[in-house]
Amino acid sequence: MDINTLIKNNSNLIVVLIIMQLISGCDLELQEDFDYVGNPIEIPTSDLTVYEYVKSNPDSIFDHLSLAIEYTGMKSHFESSERTYFLLPDYTWEGSGGIIAALGGTTVEDIPVDKLKKLLLYHTIDEWVDQETLPTISTEYFYQTMLEGDHGIMVIEREEIRFRLDINDSRSVPDGTLSTRVDRHNYRFSNGVAHLLRNFLRYGEKAYD
Image (cartoon, rainbow, N blue to C red; front, top):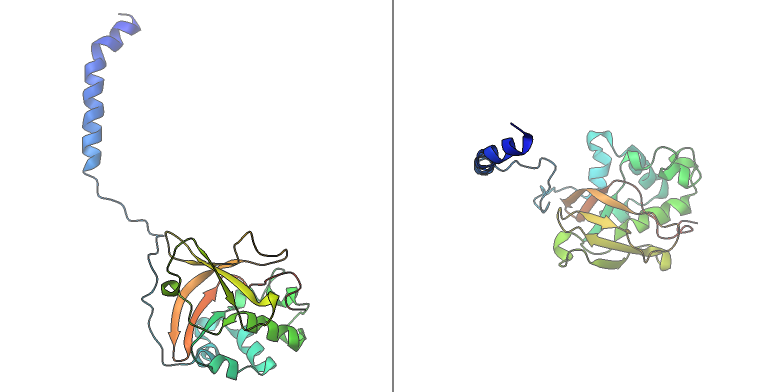
């Protein structure tokens, strides 16, 4: 029997087998995407101020930020009300691409105080910012941070699917701008809301000079 005859004789069987496979596939349960994060708004509220939270150093991730706050004398800045703080864990300070190296130091205390102050001011907005204040997805929202002037602009966008916040990821930003996304959202404290960043931010190459 040649191949053409074999295929012709078995074509109906092949069709039946394909249909049965498709039907059985419909009975499979939808697998949950373990990496999916929905609207991450339900975050426990703390009675601590942001300053107290950083000083408590949960999971030992704020050694550098805590030192920077004390070194710059900016304790009161992290105790003021109704602000949004973009917190900088230790991994954003360390390594060749971290804050310490970028600002010309080998330790936090090697960095000129005025540069550190500009950095901390840029990572603060004097109003509440979270997913609920950004009503339209995939839209760029421009904010003036507490760093005055053009270098104090921050561009925030709410991602369409995961509702994560992307920052300075825009074609309109100047050269030398550093972008990142929020790793952990909406830590609600007695004096505002905080988001933990994946990397530090900068709006323009000379922002902290």
